[in-house]
Image 1 (cartoon, helix red, strand yellow):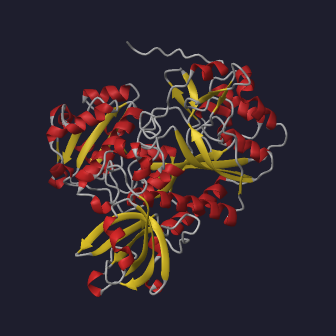
Image 2: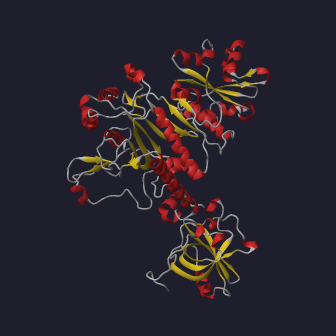
Image 3: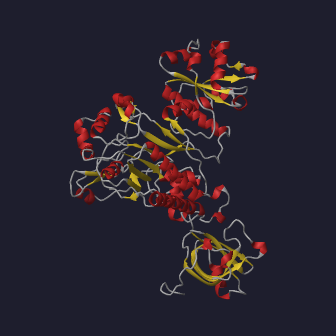
Length: 607
């Protein structure tokens, strides 16, 4: 057996071999993906991160390797040296990039054997339908095996290519400079809970892990960096879901002396570069735009999926003089009535699913709605419904309803009535549900759009105060400074098929404006100085106008990979309970460590 000192150097990766390498002597390293014995001639599929190539060990042609090839099993780590040959015509494999060639294994060395039974099949070839796909808990427990498999290996390569494309564009084409910002910083109110780190050398004091580099990147603009970016690690202690992790990655950017229009143009070029480089997709520019008000009015959502129609329509005017009590009370109390037109919905959706206890009725109830009313449009524009709603519609109101909604025969009109926020949310969820159920959403369509002009603030009912819709460093529209609470923000989000993938804004860069915003969200002058005094002071030393944006790298790659969870594009993610099944973190620590940090646990396990 060769030793590490004299072992041949790898000449090629498995997935890189092609017809052009015919006759070349190569040395490959990797894992056995599959073994097949054809009457003494052994075929081994060798796998590394680039792909698979077929090895051949034939007693007549490569006698030195036939014994070891017969012993090799799935996931053995091996080194092979041999010559590249064309495959026979009847054994070509068009599914593989290397499917026209094979390597005659003249030397074979088993570097490591599998000593334990695999907890699940790593090779795609070993999967027997859906039943063989391991549960996520098992995949996370043995993540190093999961990452060997084709799907996860492909996702990691995609992530690498996306990040590489980001760096190349920002550095080579847009003049950005990468600057690292601190991981250990101070706790500031930015929305989610901070992860806290006790300081050993400053007893009783704490660092916080950054929820984003927001304050530091603004300070870099004060510093004259001008165009900053960072592939930044961020941390938020919040409830988790499929597109959230306690630690995640952002592409963070900040720019001085650029208007909002210039920032959006630069970012469209960035996104187009990523898609062209990684997916060879040419995106049309400019991206469509919707104001926040338009998005909420038409879709009930500030991140609308515009791949299909079924837009919401405000029909409050139709029922302004209605005798239908539910609608009348809604309008008297300041609510709205909106319709969701469902084309061909008459045939596709039954009364049972709309009535109490039905699936659509139950769905909207989950989002605060009291229920659903409906109208079916029949031939000739006739309207068919039940109960008091039918009796409240005069011929004139029927005509106006059809005019507003554009409903044609066969259309089902579903109505939401009540507080505008609840109506928007419930009908938005209903729209997306029906879009999937009725197969109205084209899976291969790719819609990117900007949503702009967000409100500066939203009301926090629990705390009885305004809070920043994005963050409190977002600049208000200059036209709205006289009424800051009702102001529009100079903010913008990038939405891809109904998923927010990036968001940013022009920033406040004048101390007096920043202090007014802090006051609007309920921070006293003393609290503002305590939490953000360093930023306010920096604004007095010649701060340039600036703005920026951050992209969720995990979420962007998830969508590009066609996955449903960001856990499938992160090498070592946490579960929805925030645990690492691989390392069993978080875990307890010794009392000695806590004592050094001047920290004591108040946790008492339940009896």
